[in-house]
Image (cartoon, rainbow, N blue to C red; front, top):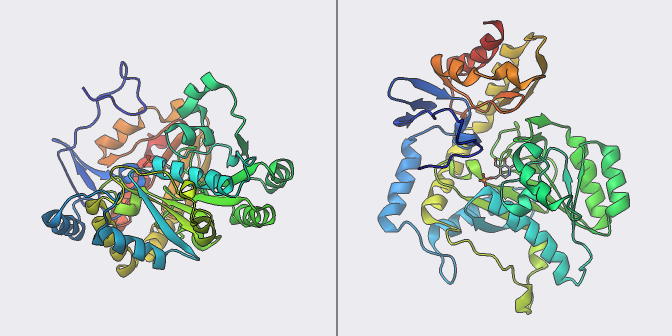
Length: 399
Ligand SMILES: Cc1ncc(COP(=O)(O)O)c(C=O)c1O
């Protein structure tokens, strides 16, 4: 049987069975649903996109996959070239992997080894944020800070390798003062912390983090697995503040195939590039650079550019602000909006229990968690579809 994610299998509610999907819609046997979650924030172009399908089919006629150990191929090369020219600054060195969690692991390993290669073996610590979520593998759980996901780590007690701070400049400055010579990196979900509760914070925090990282020689990692490709209203937050390592996943392939990239700048790459074989980055997921994933990722970026997705995202934000204006309820703590993300935070998780079925009956798929009722819609959504998603969220409170 399938063991489902984040669920107590004994009590979980039967999942909705999807039999077809097209555009922003998921189809069950008896319902047509707008996917307000974009399949965990990844399906930015919607489902069954003709050009994305075609890109995969074309590649499939050649081959589906070859390993990158000792081999290479055109789709991986083209994608790495495209990312090199498309990403800001000198984020030019692209390491592929098969999921966001693994790509974050790679980033953390790069940062640690960067200093090991220089003989600075005392820099074993990572500065991370409170409420951070970076994935479910062990090191990403350790830099994450979410009891609700990762309470199993309590078995190990508090990590001496990770410090968590709130997104406040004073806390940031204090942490650097205290730990700067032991830190190899600072890792953040920039501007928008997703799984930790759709928490939004100001760019000034990132600007100060960049300054302090420069001052103390600490590497800055942006985990843009969730925020990348427009979600915050910026193409990448890295366009505003430049990190040393950028992690991309989810929407990289338009949500078609699990794939991710850890993109390093020249300084990081050069920390590995010498005659000593021990200074090589010892990592190599079997499916890194998968040809189907790379070909669909290339097409996804092409669509993003050619069809002015940033304008679509601006429009989504505008409609969302218009529709949510004036919405209040005593059970609601806060309504947060950034780019193509909206979150209603309630005081008590009980308030939104049952919402998923309520939304289902009204033709919307939603997956609230904890105290958060949110939408991260596919960017191709039409105005009336988005309005339906947002009104359904509000109707729950007036029903
Ligand atoms: C910010 C962030 N980093 C990493 C991950 C992990 O990505 P994956 O689920 O592809 O391993 C996620 C997933 O939600 C995420 O939101």
